[in-house]
Image 1 (cartoon, rainbow, N blue to C red):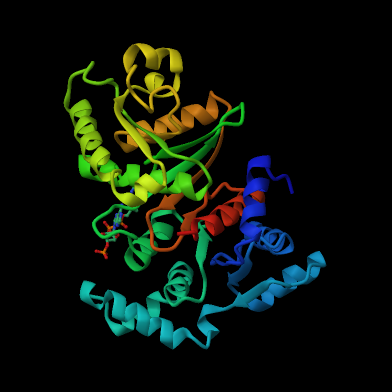
Image 2 (image 1 turned 180 degrees about the vertical axis):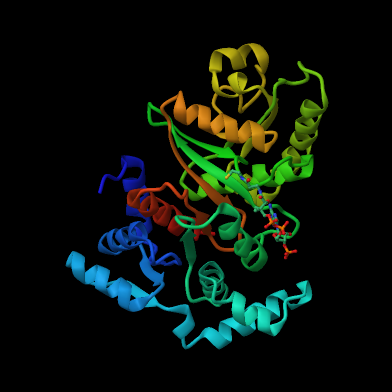
Length: 335
Ligand SMILES: CC(C)(COP(=O)(O)OP(=O)(O)OC[C@H]1O[C@@H](n2cnc3c(N)ncnc32)[C@H](O)[C@@H]1OP(=O)(O)O)[C@@H](O)C(=O)NCCC(=O)NCCS
């Protein structure tokens, strides 16, 4: 299996954390291959949901053992009743009946998510066979945002061609964030940078630098920057050494020569490593341009701001991509 050097470094860190990750898509060979690789490399203890006999037969055929892997058929689980009750308790105020909870808990993405809620797993990786919405919805409904009134958002980690690491958000969840939601996204992304071992220099991106361009979009980012600058004065962000500035054009954020001209007094411009996009269009198009034309490695979308990590895979993913996301998910369990 071909694993990038960036992911190899994350695997080394993940091995020390001794976490349990649930994979709800045991019917998919790529998931089984990834679970095997992740257990052999001791990235995490794996729980695979699905038909236990079929999964065992697949492992036998490959000549692999199941050390470090637990197989679980949700319908036959001894904890099914307990999990259904927990789901009902969590969702009854939203109109879920006991009958609906008993049915819903059997959906593998819900079963895996409830396992995390019950403390039987630390994180989940799904989406090789499910849409983003089907993976993300149980997470939002059950695991919920780690901070009251803060939106969950989607992060991409980018490794540039010369090996520099950047954190980009929100590229996949919040379609048109308000100024307050941009602050949420900026704070979550700064926290993610710290989880992955970097000091966050956060640029609130726009088509305008310090008022050079007019319009509602720039006004929104300017308003968000003012609020976010206040927010990062809180002791936890001071301890994380978060620096934040805006509104900045992306050239001023990244290029020291341009930064000297457009934002000479900024402590972020010229060396930003956390890039906050004004909306999903800028974020989604931006990351794909970097990937397709800029030759950057991209890891994501990774959900950030949840009480426990749940990550979505692309349906076109390879087994090695799943191994990478498992390692990332383990690191996201760190508070
Ligand atoms: C993520 C997404 C699928 C959720 O949509 P949905 O399933 O319709 O969700 P709902 O609006 O019904 O909300 C479900 C729950 O999640 C919560 N929620 C939704 N978005 C949230 C967010 N960004 N942060 C935190 N909670 C959120 C809601 O409050 C709700 O909670 P509740 O049921 O306890 O009240 C939706 O935001 C989406 O489609 N985003 C764009 C995804 C996309 O197309 N990406 C393209 C690139 S991959």
